[in-house]
Length: 66
Image 1 (cartoon, rainbow, N blue to C red):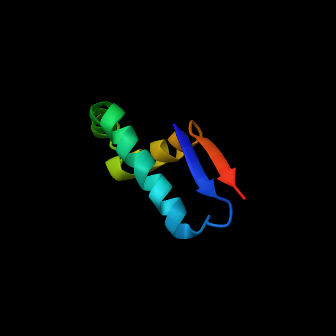
Image 2 (cartoon, rainbow, N blue to C red):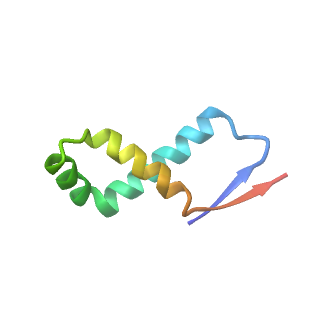
């Protein structure tokens, strides 16, 4: 996924928006597997989802406009 950002707009709101997008993507792609894993290993699903969403951000291609 290619994401275009304005270099001067990397505030917390933008970061939260990116994390939210990543969470939705991870949940759509791997939600059932993550829920199953969380139940089997007694892990909090929301924490697991957030960790995977952060990892997923590394798969994005960011283009910064200056």
